[in-house]
Image 1 (cartoon, rainbow, N blue to C red):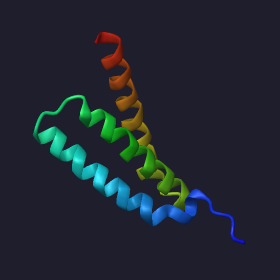
Image 2 (cartoon, helix red, strand yellow; image 1 turned 120 degrees about the vertical axis):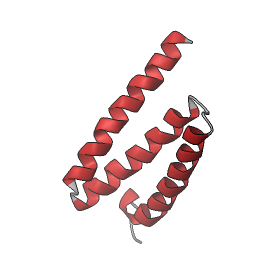
Image 3 (tube, one colour; image 1 turned 180 degrees about the horizontal axis):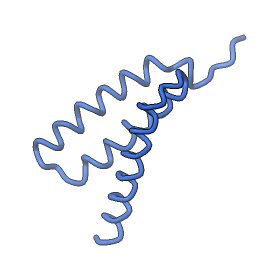
Image 4 (cartoon, one colour; image 1 turned 90 degrees about the vertical axis):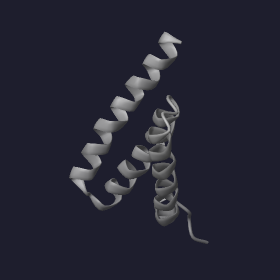
Length: 81
């Protein structure tokens, strides 16, 4: 029996990232703050993981930077609310 790892679901994760990206874009256009951060973070985390699978260094590091910024924004949102 084949052991299922996250790598087996790479294509499904990419489709999920596409949906999250579309939702995030709509949230930005509609000014639905803070939904943009809560949707953008998992989008970035999926792409960090997919970049690690294929060692796409530039994509990985760009998404790490965005993830850190999203985490900062989410933390700040909870601290100030």
